[in-house]
Image 1: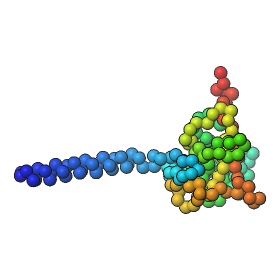
Image 2: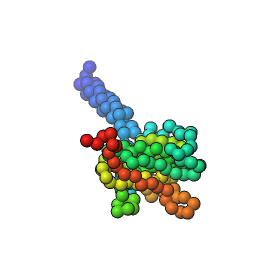
Image 3: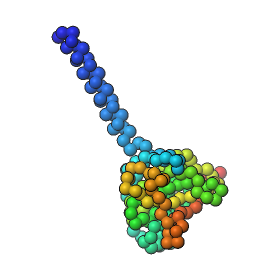
Image 4: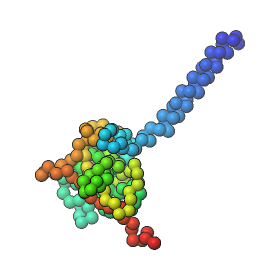
Length: 178
């Protein structure tokens, strides 16, 4: 081999390694962003988080009727909020927000749910604190299921024009208290 052939072979090996490492990085980071930015920006949400456990029974433990609604019980502190049930006419977002003196504050987490009656988990940017209240609201999806944008994915309202939401608290379950 000549000197030029050695140089070309070395460059080809280096380019191959860079491309392989880039591919590995992309593969490992696909859908890894499941966070939500504050109201001022957009956020990526892992599409694998679409709820798949559709509830079929209606009754006292669930939502009755076919309109949009959400049910969340008090939660244990931490970064996960269990949505007991959300009822949607089309795919939509469940948002968890801070309680800012009785009104919804910053968005702490969001997850896309499929249409129908579903349950699931919403992961938060920071953990809930014992004794603090939070809001859960539902918003429409503007058609991009990977991206929650507060300016485009607008809140779902009831017949009277009120945003559909519920308030819950972070508490410690009685079997977990010292």
